Amino acid sequence: MRSGRVQEGQSEVLDRIDQGGKGMSGGLHLDDPRSQYIARISHGKDSLKMLDVIVSRGLRLDRITTTDIWATDTIRGEHPEMVEFKARADEYIWRRYRIEVEHLCAMRNGEKVTYEKLFYHVPKRKPEKCRGDIVNDKGGSSGPRRCGDRGIDRTSHGTRTDRPQGFPAQIGSWCKKLKIDYIRIPSQCRSGRGSAYQAQNKGFRQPHRIVEYLGIAADEPKRFGQLSDRKRAPLVEFGIEEGLCGLYCQYEGILAPSYGASCRDGCWMCHNQGVDQLRQLRKNHPELWALLLKWDADSPVSFKPNGRTVHDHDRRFQMEDEGLIRADDRGFRWSMLDEQLNYRLF
Image (cartoon, rainbow, N blue to C red):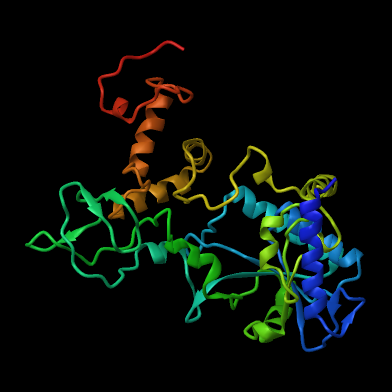
């Protein structure tokens, strides 16, 4: 049962929709032929259940879009397991609703904006001197992070020039641009059914003509503040909570693997992921791990804000493979990588 606070928040959302939607059909959505009704999905349980609610409750739906992150021009930023799942979910959506999911991504001047391109971008900055092994990077990263000799071109006076951005910071990360900036539909469609992409995209650059459906559940009151007559949450309007969304996706066989232990929800190159997730990436996707190691060698700042690099983690995982340390050792210290170790019996 929802709490009174959640019900009160839900009522406020419906009041805002009613006030902003004069001329609504049944008080639920604008009946304006000039408007486009677009469902923004992440392929998570809430957004997939949202599609079912929209169609079963008779709400207008013109388009379904999702945003892809690209690590390189040819490699997606999501874990391969999630890429495969999204393809299966797209097919499910097409069979059930006869609407092709439009895959958007960051685009600029007709080209994809990828993690790798932003990583190697050289921002305009004033030359600054490297103070020993620690540098306070002012070019997009926050806090002290190691620089050493990694990825840095120094002048004869010790200042750094032509330095790429390298890995993003935890606060103010430049990688967020891949999800919120320059979002467009790529010129090449993924499937034969994608011929409608270009025609549908004509109204995409006209926000005043768009009504968005967002996958916010009825028991997520902290997210209600972003809703309005132009940003709708069908799950909130009809009182559907997160638990029911999960059960629905399980029953339909469209529950993303990120809800289990098979992969993380997010990008495989994310600097915010934990040690266990990095260990799993190295084990299951060595080709992606090799690319992360390459970027680590070229980055002027460390992968983690505490100064630890991808190569540090690689050494740790290698020692685990060799039985020198245990993966579940709660007493692990990074200094152990440089200490004289003896083989241990497990």
